[in-house]
Amino acid sequence: PRADQFAGRLNRFVILQGRVLSVGTRKNRTYLNFGGRWSSDVTVEVPAGRRDLFGGTPALEALSGKWLRVRGFAVEKSGPMIEVRHVWQIEVLATRPR
Image 1 (cartoon, rainbow, N blue to C red):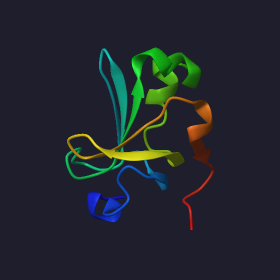
Image 2: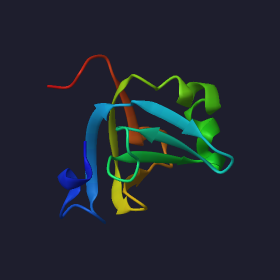
Image 3: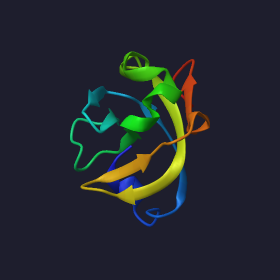
Image 4: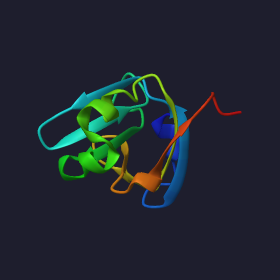
């Protein structure tokens, strides 16, 4: 998923399907990166205070390489981003979506 796919969808509820290429953990948040350039590819953000709901940092980092379906509001935050705060927003898919 790229930024141009979110044209007209910012500030709206979206469902994103894609493979997590990398996971970045910082003090205040964890990023699930769906592309190589965070400024142009979609990123999912998990606030630090919500990490434990998702199994903690190791569980979030284990999502690298996995196919996900993510539900949430798309916003512009130095690139397209979806902030997740609830476990129902992330679904791990068994295979690549069709």
